[in-house]
Amino acid sequence: HVQLVESGGGSVQAGGSLRLSCAASGLTYSRHAICMAWFRQVPGKEREGVAGIDSDGSTSYADSAKGRFTISQGNAKNTLYLQMNSLKPEDTAIYYCAARRLARPFLRGPLRCLATQAQGDFSDWGQGTQVTV
Image 1 (tube, rainbow, N blue to C red):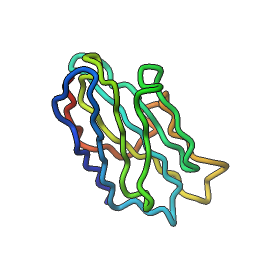
Image 2: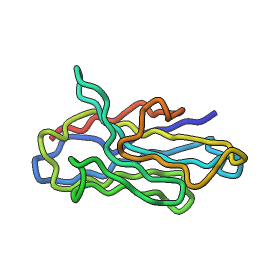
Image 3: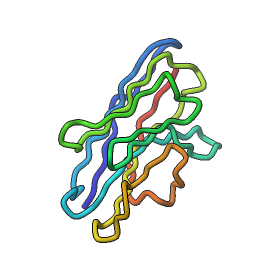
């Protein structure tokens, strides 16, 4: 059973920084290629991708996040981070982490979790953490 739990959200002034964390449990890297991503959603709007990290460690960002946000993983890959700097009021949203898995026999190259990846490609989601700027 996969569980993703986000933390680190809060209120910050414009120009400030926050570091979001996503604690992952139940991910079996021995059996699956796994990539992860951060999404965000403002009430009344569609959820949008912010940043993604592929199974080979490659990263991608939405244009709104480039140069300000950094996605990374802990050494054991059981924690996903999103360092957010130079925050703007338009960054206010609920931030979600998500995981995409593919059984290794079906893998043909790195598993991609692009910032533009379709939400339907992700099988596991956290409950979200509120960021208010």
